[in-house]
Length: 229
Image 1 (cartoon, one colour):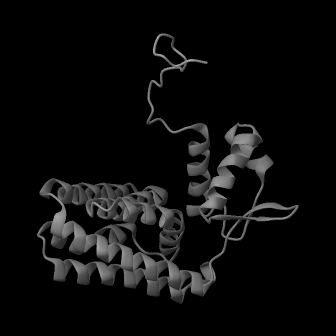
Image 2 (cartoon, one colour; image 1 turned 120 degrees about the horizontal axis):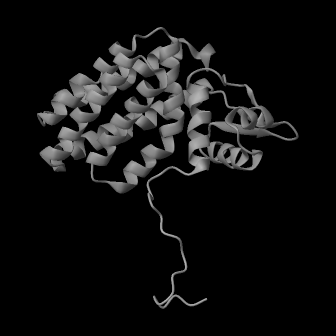
């Protein structure tokens, strides 16, 4: 096969940003975990999930393997996939790393990001507020994680942003557990406003203090309800 430009080999991608089937399945499985339809520790029935989604088991298994690679699912020999549970040590490790990453990202963003970049934090905060008003737990959690991802992107450090993405599935599940603690989604959304506003004002001491408190509050609240994990 030659690729000298004279013959068309590949089909055009009408919308390269359109999620693939496997990505759609992965998101749907994650949504089911976030909304409690697949509880932590539950077995994931490939046949039942595939039946309800109207798909074959092959792409579902591929999506489940991706979630296994990202730490949400575990496999048990001869028994298939299970939604993982979190130990107290894993919770401490995750939130400790998250705090380090995001506070460093905040300092870098305040020092280096453009005003336009920092304004994107406000836009994402607004999206989080709108999701809270709509009262969709999964959408609230998605927009919550998207806001923190946007902060990491504002740092201009691509490696840091990738490290946050490595934590994103775990954080999505853990943030959703806070919703199980009867926390009003509107309060969850409002809890981000102090550090976002201070970041846009380039007030690092205030922003760092507010972000550290925001992460610490979630961490401590989670530790008090470790039985949910």
